[in-house]
Length: 184
Image (cartoon, rainbow, N blue to C red; front, side, top):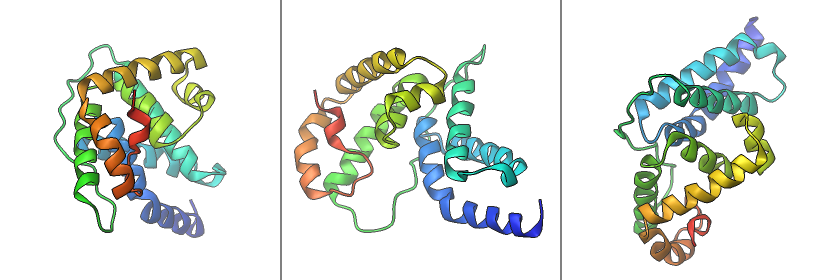
C-alpha cells in the first residue's frame, strides 16, 4: 500500500471506527471485547484490498456481518456474555432515551446471534430484506421469517419496550434505536 492509500485508510478508520464499533457491539450481543476483535479483523481484511475497494464502509460492514455469521456457524459455539455497553453517541441524552437503549441492549443480548444479526441489519442498518439475505447468505423468505420470530421474541423478552415507545419517540427523536420497530 502506497503512502497516499495509507493516509486514506487511516482517515477512514479515524472517521468511521466509532460507528463501525457500535454495529460490531450490537452484532456481538454487547460484548465489547469481541466487537473490537471483530472490527479489527474486518479492518485488517479491508487494508489488504484497500486499493480495489469502491465503497470502503459497505465493504467493512459486509466483512463484519460475514465474520459474525461465521462465528455462530462454528462447530463449538462460544458462550455469549454481555460485558460491555456500546459506545454512546456524543450529545445530550434524555432519561427516557437512555432507559430505552438499556432495555433494548439487554433484550438484544438475549436473542440468538442469527436473530440479533437480522434485526441489526434490518432496523439498525435499515437494509432491505434482499440486502440482508445477500449479506447473510440466505433467502429473502428466511430473512422475513427470522425477522418475524426475532421481533416476537424481543417483545416477549422486553414487553416494556411497547410502553416506553411513544414517550421516547417524542422525547428523544435522535435515539440510536427506534421504538416503532418493536411494537406489536
